[in-house]
Image 1: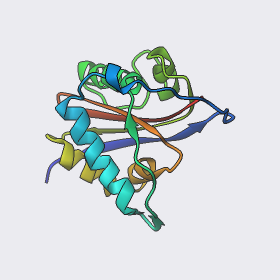
Image 2: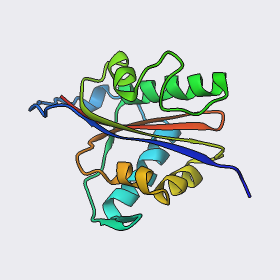
Image 3: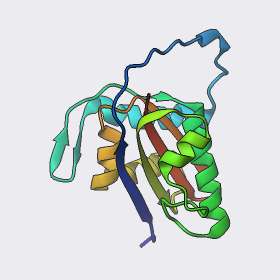
Length: 163
């Protein structure tokens, strides 16, 4: 049996604030294959609804990719790989909230899934789906953004709601 390990951080909350988002699709670069596939896998689960442990989550809106959360995820995945350890705490003592802010994401709520040992996106997302806490993160209706990264076989998903 393959030795697979998971980690999860429950959502962190700040007082919700109203925000205005202006997008300029013509300025957005073409999404990478990684981004496209990760979003497709996560949004398929979100749009279908999912049983997470003993609780059923009905369908929720799709999340969109956020490059700042992807940067935070990439830095954390690289840090875990470099130190050969899986933890939600960075080697510098940082939390997901601190890493997201460093990457420029002004959040009111963030959450993180981590995993190790998977070789592709479908298998890691399926692993998260069958793990109660990870599944709940993927199905949290408040989340509007996702950034994710893989470094070797270390995986990170960061979810967020901006301020």
